[in-house]
Image (cartoon, rainbow, N blue to C red; front, side):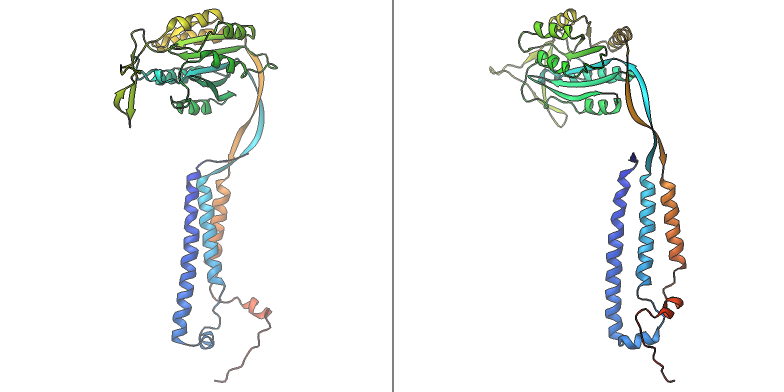
Length: 350
């Protein structure tokens, strides 16, 4: 497997065509100027050993040397071996509420950002568990399938926002149904679903959905974001609050956390409800819950070692420069003796 560490340096290769164009322009200008000075045959007599092709060859050699040094800066790496790593863990899915009510700032910085912080810290505490991410509001859709790539999970996590789902609401039931498709029936790993939400305005009755999930071995833990007092939903532009969301009567909307719904879900699915306002308490409970679950062994293949290849390109770059230094612009004697083009030698009298 090939990995390019610093791809941005490839932009330096744009210098090469510019140099070639400048060289071509210089050759054209030089020939026009020489024509004004004397005929071509006379110029050939003045400098009979001048090579037409070697100056171009020298430019090409220098361009190749520059290209090699650029690739060395990119630092290509090749995976030297593949290892099959044995992992033990559980399958963890995070269902994150991205409805507009999650923009309320009754907990800092706001409910959505707080949920991102919690999930990030939970992921940081994981060892070899597989994780997946779901986003939902009025409907649910997959954000990241089950994976052991925690780096990618964090990238997807930070990109989540309230504009991801056009239909508004908090359809927790839809998120639970989608989560059921994440787990692999063949691996039979322990299954955990974390629902992060303010619990407000859930879509329809979800008791049956929760019961079905429980029958499939999914334990559901819920994390509440927000306060019972609630808060307004700011409408921002470039990070500056312009106004606050209003209802059809023109009244400012106050959104409150509905912890009762989240508590009911956790209770019916052998889980635990946690208040997201206390970060450390959430982390402690999550760690304790995951450690109590049975770990299942599964395999994942990945490239275990990469070897730098930049030194080869530096060596070739130096070689091209050395060739350029020793390559003179006059004709090569032994090539002239070959007389490849059957040129007639003329004797000129003094």
